[in-house]
Image 1 (cartoon, one colour):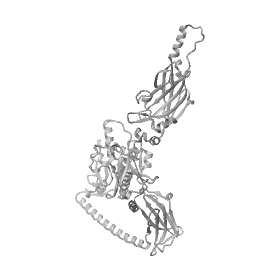
Image 2 (tube, one colour; image 1 turned 90 degrees about the horizontal axis):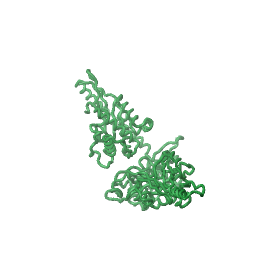
Image 3 (cartoon, one colour; image 1 turned 180 degrees about the horizontal axis):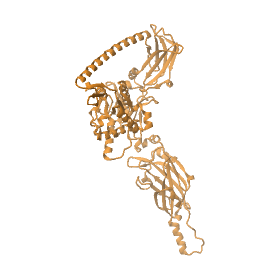
Image 4 (cartoon, helix red, strand yellow; image 1 turned 60 degrees about the vertical axis):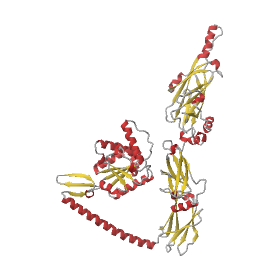
Length: 624
């Protein structure tokens, strides 16, 4: 294994043509001197009992084989040493010359076979049976021979895979061989053009001070925009990014950009613009506008006061924080200093790094402040002070009075309008009763990123505040894992039947691609393809498409499903310019936040009771 692994790492791709002229899609076989007419076929392990040759030693290893003129993959090579029993010797020397000629012929044309098997974990073994003609007189070593088997697969053996190789007649000769990892292979520059999965986008950048943006430049497949994410610090989370520019206020010394192609196995290139160069001083001033410090007073159990501070920055910083009293001038107190150290920083949901601390036994007679000194900065940061307690209480009182006046005015306005509309509906022959608001089921698209996830969360919270019963897929992950995506959605639709309401299907650019792909597969009668878009909500989104299709055949899809697009969501092309797939035709579409009020109007349930019967519809009577 080791010699071959070094061959792989040195970029020596072994072609099947180099071993013996043959095509890639055929397993290759080399027999040593004395063996001829070698053929190989797949068999089941039980047939090995018929073998007349014994495998005495195995040496399996992995190497790279060319799949075509531009691409190579991992192949398994099995070197074997065989023992071939001799033909029956002449029992006495008194036989005739004809018998001796027959014996010599048997020595040259004896038939034999040997079988070798290989298997990965939790898979069935695959066995190769080799049949050959033996010329005992031509064997290099008496009754011993060698053969090399090169085994190929359509997409090659997986990197880092473990394969067990053994002869079925003697499992004690079992050998385990481990394939080299993709990182080991791709670390060799000679192999970058040979192994497709080693090919990653190349990223560079230039700062445009006029537009105040960092422009990203890519080299790779047709210069198309790859998938990307931005990471602050080596151990920070990587947040999705799908634009060719980065605002300067988001640029930081610890920033790195990862890029990859979606159609490959997630191998990524990493570009850190300032890892080997100094961070520009002008950018440092811009970055510090993203630094925030919050200070507030608190109480300990023994009623003594404490001052809590919270520092947020794009990158972790080294420095110190100290307490300062606001008494006309600021002075540091040496025994009340706290260090900013790398181990005390934690990353928040927005990708910024936070450091927290507390000063105890604070004299509340003074407005408390903190000063901050960061390593590498010329000046101190601050002072940052807590809110004055007396002023805060008066401010709270003023704000409370203003809120009370505003709420009173709004209530008066809406009640006045409600009575007016109710009188109008009664005059026109119907008694209008504002009924309860129904259930709203909110489904995320299958490509949820942080911005879409946050928009879905805010929409669900907003609908809850408007009095609706809301079920959001992001809030029900545990229940979905227990029931499964399809049963969970079926349960929500059953609730809709009894409570009334709608399913809101959130659309995005990739969601529309997913719907068109789903429609094509179902129209052509093809089976489902492996999902290229992976998110916790992909299966649930696909399940909703089956229900929409079923209801549409009954002309009832609009009674159950509404469509929602977030206009603020960044997409590769404007969502409003794209035509909806045929599956979604006829479903109401709302662009948020511009049509938020229209959506609320359509979701509200109104019951109309008249002498001859009752009917239900969506929309406020006076709003439609």
